[in-house]
Amino acid sequence: MERTDPTMGEAPMTYAVPVRDLPGRQVRTVRTGRSPQGRRVGIAFTRPELLVTAMGADQQWEELSESALRGMLRPLGIDVIQVDPLLVAPPVESVDRQARTNRSASAITWPSVSSVRISTLPSFPAVNG
Image (cartoon, rainbow, N blue to C red; front, side):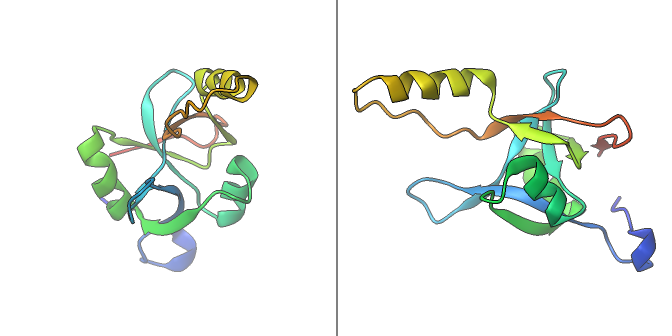
C-alpha cells in the first residue's frame, strides 16, 4: 500500500532514489544497500538534499513513487526500503579492492559497486512492504 504525504493531502509519496547507469547499456538501475545488520535494502530519500548529504553531489537520482520503487526491488528479493539513511558508502571490501587496484600497474578493472553500506538514525525506520 502506498503511503501518502500528510503535507500534500492524498498524493502518493515520491522519493529521490539513487540510481546508476549500467556499463555498456542504456539502462539505469536503482542502487541497493545493506543495513548495518547486513540485510539487503532499497534506498530512498524524502528530499534530494538528504540524498546529496548522504551520497554526495555526484550521485545520480530519479524521482520515483514508492510503488514504482517496490516494483523494481521485488525481483531482487528486497522488501524493505530504508528511508533517509545518514550515510551511504561502498562496502569495506570494495574500498580495499579499489586501493589495491590503484596501487598496482596492472590493467585489471573491478566491477562497479551496486550494493552499498548504509548508516541510519533510529528515528527513521525502514519501510517494510
